Amino acid sequence: MSKKAVIALAILIIIVLMNVIFLEVIEVVVVDKNERFNEVVYRTRRIEGLDTIDIHWIHSVSRRPILERYRINEDYTIDIEEMYFDAFSANLPNDPDADTIWEITDDYIRVYNYDITFDAIPVVIGAVRANHSMEYNGTEVFLKEVYKPGGFVNIKVRKVNLMAYIFERR
Image 1: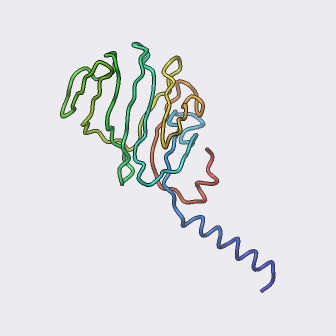
Image 2: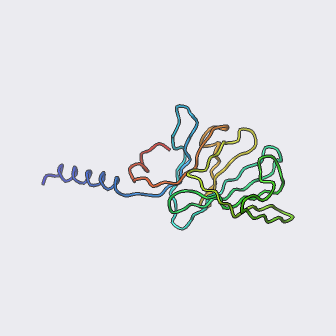
Image 3: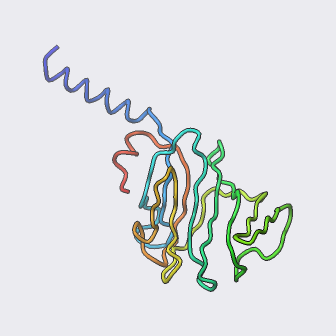
């Protein structure tokens, strides 16, 4: 076999492997109806056994920090696990509903035991003070740095082949 044939075969094998090797990823995807719709603006590999994503933001009315913690399921859906805040305000839970449990201390209010599952976490990136961020595996990503303030994104988990992981825009 000639040297060129060996190189061509090696390249072909690499391409095939890149299409059959899959990775689990967490992505921030634009869902605004514009030219960037469905664009992946941030991606990181999911780490086996590390199943929580935290969303941090500042409430626009109370100007107090909010933490939403989500759990990744085996089928790549995402459950809201708990929410922490330290002051009641608009669009925050104000009393137990369904089966939620409330833990109230001098320092925080923790709401947990939700029964809510998402295909993706919807986030409208705060344009003024919210400063939404996503934290996973000790890395915090400020969403207004990967897409525009006021923009609408989904945070989702999916499986992609190695080719897509390397070459899709992000």
